[in-house]
Length: 244
Ligand code: URA
Image (cartoon, rainbow, N blue to C red; front, side, top):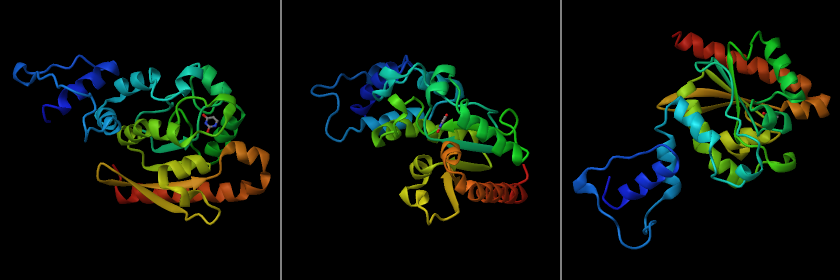
């Protein structure tokens, strides 16, 4: 790392509560002029700090995050819950009131439907499925998460996926699907099978409806069931290709 970038990175790491950062005496150069010199990339620096975190520092950083305004209205950040080596990863949009209060994802009525959907595949959240959201803090009034809030949280989700290394990912609802896969994944004409590349490994991704949407509009339940069966087929294919 060059001498200008290093102090910025050190300050960032310390501000995130991850320091101290030890710097060799010969490299202790105090830059003159603005902290973010031309060419500096604070968002990129933050991303690379997060991309190097282990599970517990990552949890700590999410719980103390102030990267966007949701920090001012949340009760607590909702990191996610489930086994740390799960077969499945389910990704929703953002915590609601119940989740904000309890600090766990999908614990309200939508969560009960999610549990039933997973049980229909023989899956349990305790044993098989890690559940999280693209945005870790509740948007006020349960409004849709804004693009900049999703962008602030994205490095957390990416690091969670890399550390969890699930066999299959299921995104629930258009916000989660678009955030992970791009806008096309969330359209009515959606392609069924997607994948994401994590540390050089392709993880298959299936998309489905959000449970809260299914509670309002029963019409899509059959489609959701087909999506779940499709996700299970992706899981079985992944296991057959690499049993361990
Ligand atoms: N809806 C979501 O998308 N996530 C939750 O955790 C709860 C409701």
